[in-house]
Amino acid sequence: MNNSKRFLRMMVLSMLIALGVVISPILRVEGMCPMAHFINIICSVLLGPWYSLLCATLIGIIRMSFMGIPPLALTGAVFGAFLSGVFYRASNGKIIFAVLGETIGTGIIGAIISYPVMAFIMGKSGLTWLFYVPSFTFATIIGGSIAFMFLKKLSKNGMLKKIQMSIADKSYDDNSGIVSNTASIAAIGVIIYLVIRVLVSVFELTSPIWSYISTTVIIGFSVVAIIYYLVNKSKNGVGND
Image (cartoon, rainbow, N blue to C red; front, side):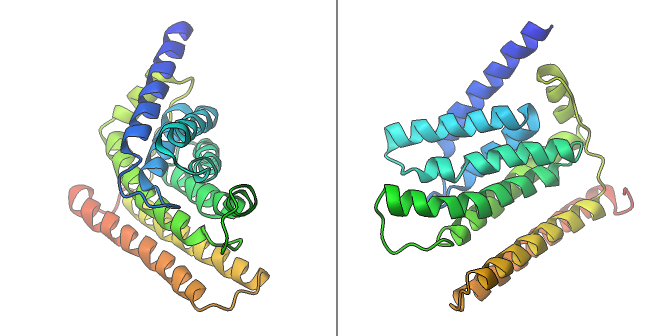
């Protein structure tokens, strides 16, 4: 049975890597690759943090080798991939925490680490420590929202748990109600907003663009939360918390 699960894990991992390479050009511009974050979260939920880290690393290497993508393919993926899996397991299977881990890992950590890599290794000029934070964060909002809705659908019809039981050592069952999930989505926006405001204060950034970015983030997550609530309210009601 263990050998069978290992084989299935390798198959799922291979499929996610192939899918990640194929769909990564969708909506992509330099510094923003939403579908990479979609794959990171899916892999984290299905296989865990280490497999997700491996998946993101291999996809990044392939994209850099064959598509001419800069090292952002790695710095903008590996930290979020790992934290997504860690947060998901630490929360005992809350999908929204997988999205939160991806957002923090990519939108903050990966974005900041990308600066010295691109500035000093790749020799790109005109960059600052927070140059990639807006695009990375916006990309995780897009990819994370798609992954969240996809995984919640799988969870509701029982397929997610079946898949996890067939390929992983442990399965999870996200029983969060609609109100809890809506609040969690909005809370992620608030957390990112506060992180950006702290960074602005620490680095003494005076450009008005940072106020615009932080406001856009919190509004974006609020809109996603409202859409999620309205879509699910008519189907399931609001009382299943």
